[in-house]
Length: 157
Image (cartoon, rainbow, N blue to C red; front, side):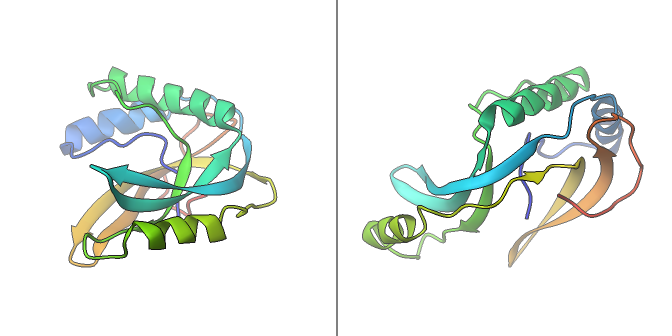
């Protein structure tokens, strides 16, 4: 499970190294966050993902801007979509349930919450698409609060 700060997309190795170098320069405090509710992302009127809301949004939006700026310095275009801090819980297949079933799920889980926890680091992931969906491989990790890369593919927070 992960909280996406910026989707990068497909890049070649040199640009990936540039992105990692720029991300390593980020200095930001480790925010204390919590899960607070659920939601649905829809595309063309059809639900395609279920997610858990993450609060407080201000701290995460600030971190998102820093990550986006680092990616722009590495040659990527700026993110155009509004940032919505969330943890994806499930993707919904086209053949899955109908609107009423999804609405009922959202109503049943509206009170989903967690105790506050500290987001201790950033992780750059490489995704691999397969028949069962995407799998994620950690490439590099940086502790929050210091800005120094530990250079290890490690556990994600």
